[in-house]
Amino acid sequence: MIGDVRLEWRKSSHSGHEGDCVEIATATDRIVIRDSKNPSGHAHHLSLAAAAVLIRAIRERR
Image 1 (cartoon, helix red, strand yellow):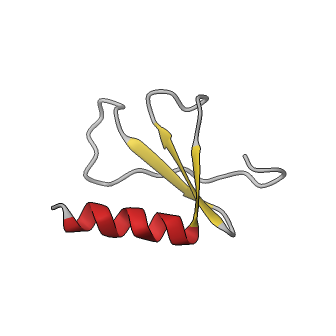
Image 2: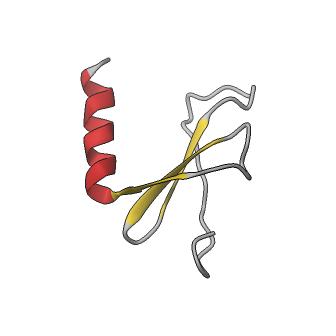
């Protein structure tokens, strides 16, 4: 939750059922990333621009 906004977490449809996935949620001005094994742990907040850079870097390494 960010302030009064409840986040909708989702993970890739390619994820297995082992529970070791990265989950993402979108807010108005940011992307939030967390480890599905520890949903109450630390979440990383990225600006939309930073998230775009991260996604581009991941895609380029495929």
